Every structure is written in structure tokens, then in C-alpha cells.
Amino acid sequence: MLSYTLKRLLTLLPTLIAASILVFLFVHLIPGDPAAVLLGDTATPQEIAALTREMGLDKPLWQQYTLWLSEVAKGNLGQSIFFKAPVTSIIADGAQTSILLATMTIFWIIIFGIPIGVLSATRQGSWVDQLTSGLAMFFASVPTFWLGLYLILIFAVGLGWFPSSGFPSIFDEGGISNLRYLLLPSLTLAAPNAALIIRLVRASMLDISREDHVRTARAKGLHPTKVAIKHVFRNALITVVAAFGFTFAALVSEAVVTETVFSLPGIGRLVVQSILRRDYPVIQGVILVIVVLYLFINLLVDLAYAMLDPRVSLK
Amino acid sequence: MIFLSRLKAFASSRVLATLGMVWLGVIIFAAVTAPLLAPFDPTEIDPIARLSEPGSLYWFGTDHFGRDTFSRALFGARMAILIGSGSVIVALLLGGLVGMLSAYFTTLGHVFMRIVDVLMAFPALLLALVLMTLLERSVINTILVIGIVYASTTARILFGMTLKLKNEVFVDAARCSGAGHISLLFRHILPNLISPLLVQASFIFAFAQLQSAALDFLGLGLPPEMASWGNMLSEERIYVTRAPWLLIFPGALIILSVFSMNLVGDAMRDSIDPRFKNDIAGV
Image (cartoon, rainbow over all chains, first blue to last red; front, side):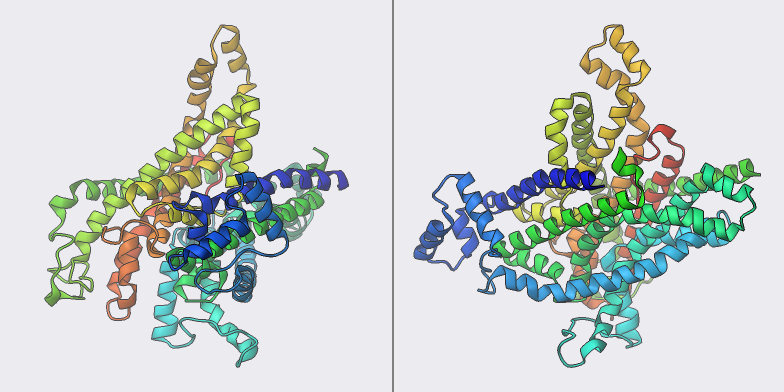
């Protein structure tokens, strides 16, 4: 297990470096002088010259990269053109919303996805299975923003049960009850991903129930429910854990849309607004943070997978 | 009994897949004949008819410019087909070539597949957003961006499949009888990959619909004046409380199209070569 961990860490490193180079190059791919791009339209020639010196933009590209990387390592992701503030603190501001939204979403995904998937698999072919499989496929086919708009129309505008947009911090007035602002967004975000988990749990449970050890368990007279839980479901969970990396990527992508629909002050909406505002330092910073996070989550997922299924690390 | 239930499942998945194909046919028909079928010019503005309810004159109602939603939806089908098939072609050509060549020429593969790894470190929509930042909003750029995003997944899938195939006896046999690299790759290996490629194509087509709608919605997809289902939703979303039909029709069209292609992909995957069963990632 230790050697597997080390091996996995070693393969992460080159990807991490390559991804950081790509994110670094992003600013250089935009037409125009990088310093002018980073400072925005209002920059004076003196400011441009100053930033050019500071970032070493007159030096060779690889030196610029190492300079940039050393600043990033110190937690300096540059200055936002729009906010006139450090990118790191702007990302930190959005983090609360995004983390809470993600947590609530994952909660829904587990609550809905896993039991429905199990139900569907244990009743394979029945009307329950056909209905849930159909619904799962439907929710995997619905555009996130469309679902969000619809939920707003019904539950916020029509019934008035929930607020339609925004999210005051849970540290502000209202405290923990402010989470109700995140209820519709988290359900919107959970729908396609729960659908995915339902399909995944169902498929892997059906796969595993064809294996020899399950047949043996049945043959020795174990109760079908016990077989389903102890032998089939436990093994199917491994597949679900393995899929979490993929789920995270889907969550990030869809959070960008969901946060925009519900006007949530999170990192996803920050990306979109920064793109529309041409606030390149913020775009670069957010992308870097998300990619690094994603790579580490994939690492953790792989390690968890190896722990749950020892065959992986022995390969 | 097991055989019977399997047969039933196969038949029912076939029925659904057929329905999916029929819907695709409808969309293609609408896309081709849009100028003939559309009762109005999709860009014609009629201030008097603003936000008219669906009726005998305006089947799907009108938007806040008084443009006919039905006519716009027909022209939107063109965009859906164009973006869908364009992205499929880019993703399969680029990803397919990279995946096959990487598996066949191992040294090349080390470089290529690391690049694919790096691209896959970016969540799909995020990568699309970043690429769109660098490009102008246009049909061709939207196709390229979505195609490139799914080229990396395609490359990885085809890499695994080609690795399995290249060690099979029939490839050895062909090599022994003097087949060159090109002949081995394209005449002996590629034909075995056609069915998984078709499965992949239907999933990418479905994903492309969702991604392009999301890009349109975020204001980073097709140019705003173009009648696409995503743009229709994006432009009219502030009027939905007064005119809910503006949300229903384009949304239903997107959902039906994605749903259909997912059904087709699912059914094809079920009947695929068992060697590749675990390679294909779907919805």
C-alpha cells in the first residue's frame, strides 16, 4: 500500500506540473501584451512597465514560469483587475458558498442516489426498476440551468417557499437558517449527479451479483437481503467511491451554471463573471485552484479505492 | 426464465433506442427543411405580438421581441445538429487518432497520453469556458471547443481498446503476412473499433447538446443573435414568469434530444463486443 501511494504520488507530480504550465500559459495565449492583459484596459504605461518588471515578463518564458510558480507557492495568485484586491482573498470569499453548496449536494446525491440505485438493482426488471431507471436517464438529460429555472419558477416565484436567488453568509444575520437559500440550488445540482449514481449503483450491483462469491453465498442458503447487502452492495460501493472523482468534475462544471442561475456568490459564478469582465488574473487563479483540487481528489479516490480493493495496489 | 427476461430487456431497449433514432430523424428533418416549414422568419420582430401565448397563429407562442418561438425552434434544430455532429467529428477524429496511435506506437503514446491526462485534469465545462475565453463566439469555435473537450475522453477509451486489440492473434497474423503499420492500424484494428466508436459518438452528441446549451446560457457559446435552443432559453429567462412557454418548448427540445441519444447509446452499448464492455463510459 505504501509503495502504491508513493507510485501514485510520483505520477501525480508530472501532471500537476504540466497542468500548472498550461494555466500559466493561459495569460500568454490571450492576444496582446500579458502585462496589459493582466492590468486591464485602464492601465497606464507606467503600471504596465512596472508589472512587466515585477513578473519578469522581459525574461525568457521558463524564468517567468518559475517566478510565477514561486509566487503561487507563497499563496500569491496576483491582483484582480475588477476588484483591485488579491485573487486569493476573492477566491476565499467565494469558497464558503461553494463548499456549503457542494456539501449539501453530495448529501442529496448519497441520500437519493444510493438507496434508489439499490432498490432498482434488487428489483431488476420490475416496474420500480423501469420507473427509476427511466427517471434517472431523464435527469441525466436535463440541462442544469433549465431545471434550476423551473424550480425557481415553481417553488420560489409560484409557491414562495424558498428564496429565488442569492446567499447571505451563514455568519451573517439569519445564521444557519440561511442554508435555505442553498436548498433549491443544491437539489438542482444534485439531480443529474444522483441520476448518475443511481445508474452506477444499479449497474455495478447487477455486475457483482453475477460473480461466483455471490452464487456461493446464495447456495449456502443466506437470506437474499443479506446477500444483497453484505455481498453485493458492499462491493458495489467500491465502484461508487471510484466514481467520486468523476462526480467532483461534474459538480464543478454544473456548479458554474447553477451558481449563475441562482446568483450565488460562489467560485463558479466568479469564473463566469470574470470571463465576461475579462478579469484574467481571477480566471487563472480559480482554474489553478480547481485543477489542483481535482487532481488531489483523484489521488485520494485512487488511494481509497486501493484500500477498499487490495487487488489494485498489487497489480 | 433468465433468457426470457434478457430477451425482454433487449427488446425493450431496442424499442426505446428506435424511438430515440426516430426523434433524431425528426430533428434532422426539421433542421433541413426549417426555411420551408417555418411559418415566420425566425428573426422577424413584431412588437405588437410580444409574448403572445401559444395558439393557432403562434404554435409555441412568441418571445419578448414578438419573434415566433416555433420558427426559432425549427432553426434551433439546425444548430443542434450542426453542433452535435461537428463535435462528434472533431472528438472522434482527434481523440480516435491520438488514442489509436498512442496505443500502437508506445513511445509516442507516453507523450500523447500524458497530454491527455493533463487535459482531463480540467473539468469539462471549465475547460470549454477557458478555451472560449481565448476565442470568439461562433459556431465553428463552439464545435471545436466541445470537440476538443471530448477528444481527451475518446482518446483514453480508444487507447485502452487498441492496446487490447494489438496483441490479438489476428493482428499478429496480419503482421506476419506482411501488413505494414498503416494497414494494421486502419484495415485490421480500426474495423473492430467501429461499434464502440458509434456508441461513443451517440454519447458525445448528447453531451454536446448539454454543453453548448450551458455555454449559450452563460453567454459564452453561439453568438446571441443565433436561434439556438440554448440562446432562446438564455435570452428569455427573465420573462418566464409572464411567459412560461418560452422555457418549456426549447427546454423540452433539448431534453428530448439528449434523452434520445442517451437511449441510443445505451442500447448500442448493451449489444457491444464484450471485450470492450468496461471501457465505454456513458452518461
